[in-house]
Image (cartoon, rainbow over all chains, first blue to last red; front, side, top):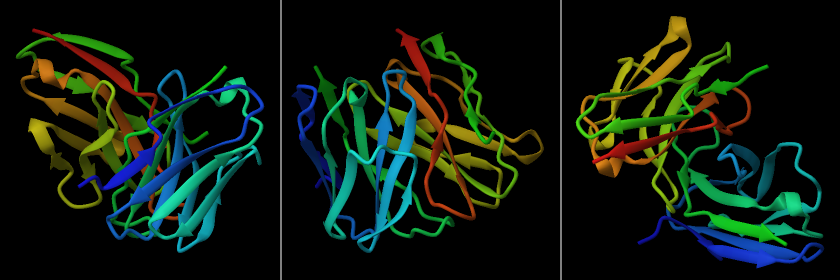
Length: 115
Length: 114
């Protein structure tokens, strides 16, 4: 069984469109994250959610909005897509939001291409 | 500025050669340290992690890493690489206080030639 899953795997869209990427984890974890990996493979945190509460938000444009219907899901909505949004987006989850002993488990990634 | 550095951008080795990938960080507090691997077209997988205790940690697939606090380093090693180790390797750091996000290095691409 896939622990952290994302859909779609590939997403190609035009500038200005609104799109969503879904993430689900079946690990029973309390915290979920979104990371962006740019064309140079650099990974940077975007958001994390713990018990439906946003706990970090790193200087991400407000066109990006995470939505968590329940603790097993954290979807990423992107409005008015721009060329610079092209990247691979990774979802992750961990058991404990406290920086202590937990480990983040990553999904397979969604490659977003904005034309 | 706080950062995670991986100085080797691309490493090319022949099979059976020994591997050492460097990772240095600049955070002053207590940290948790991780190495993740990304095989071509696949997601990030955890190789190994250090939280506390023995600074030499062993991970999956014969990898190990040594935490040297005085050098702010957490280098990844493998005594004999295989073609299947061809992948991108990422070092990551998480502060023990504050936000729970991981700070990643820029990654090192390893190419193993059969």
